[in-house]
Length: 105
Image (cartoon, rainbow, N blue to C red; front, side):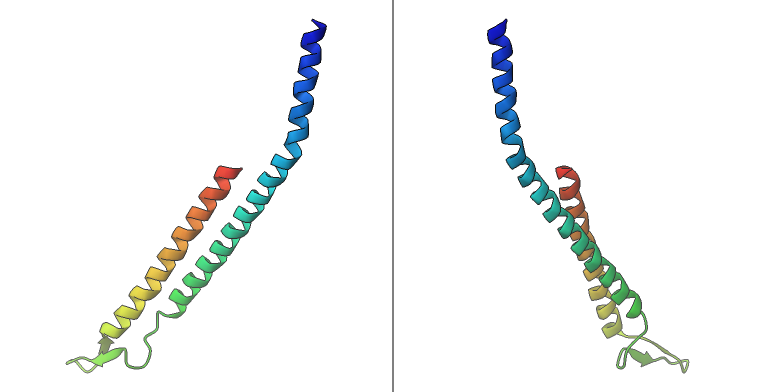
């Protein structure tokens, strides 16, 4: 029984000695994942703001209609598609970063 108790103390002591290094690595990985998620979120929010600010047509993005008004042309819709694609790309990056962070927690 004494040998068993001694063996348990030795095993627990060796595990405790190994934990701080592993904990430091885990902590560093969590911090890096958090920073990436925060950066991705900020990028996503900026992309959303650019998309919302880009709703109004710019010079050269409207053409006259037969009824005397005007309507957006292909340049406007192409720019809107680019803005929307940027939002989607940054959203996916944010979701991937959050998944990595949550997996590490």
